[in-house]
Length: 84
Image (cartoon, rainbow, N blue to C red):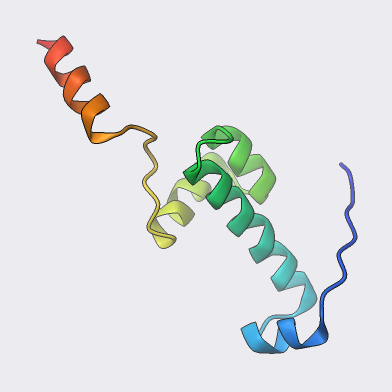
């Protein structure tokens, strides 16, 4: 695993009431959720980046109000139409 070093103002931790370790964990999750939402990475890769199992990541998606399904309404309707 590659380790990254970020410089963050001390006030960032206080603002979010997080320790540096908690902040780092939350930052990984937030990045993975956003990249997944933007369809830049798969759900499995996002879970890996977040340091979670896929099931845990799906739960986190709900907490961030991001759909676990990367389908538009039109794609769902098309799939349903083709299923019959």
